Length: 189
Image 1 (cartoon, rainbow, N blue to C red):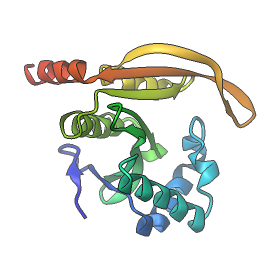
Image 2: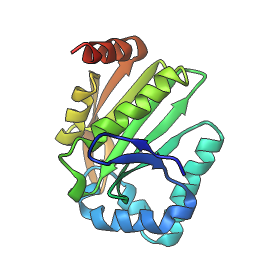
Image 3: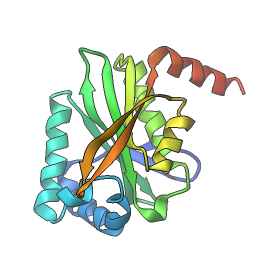
Image 4: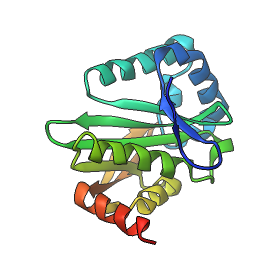
């Protein structure tokens, strides 16, 4: 299987597939409480069958050109993932997302991984708009959107019912011309 380097620290990004369900479940179990603060994934992936079903759903989305999932690994261990939860090639829009287990937090892994998948989406697939939907209470994820040069477009007040509580969701995005300009500016530094 291929992997893409995320930097000098040995972190890598590679596709997640159904045959990796056991590894994926172990990763979710290590981060279940932490990931579940803002992400419903731990409520969906509770055993080997549901882990396999989740990864199979993304394999089906990949095959239909309707979504993607890639794992983030450090020292060969799966510690997080980035996804294109929504992928609408005809409209040129996508929605990116992420999660990490606690041991991987604070190393810039999500920012580097999302930067990699946005580069691919914009440059290889012609995506014009990448969105980032995030709970207004999820400051680390909002910080990623800022680091990626995204623009906050608005707040959907109490739009997301999660574990019995209504949450505001912020919508952030970056457009392809702005993404390219930001990448050029960073390269010139």
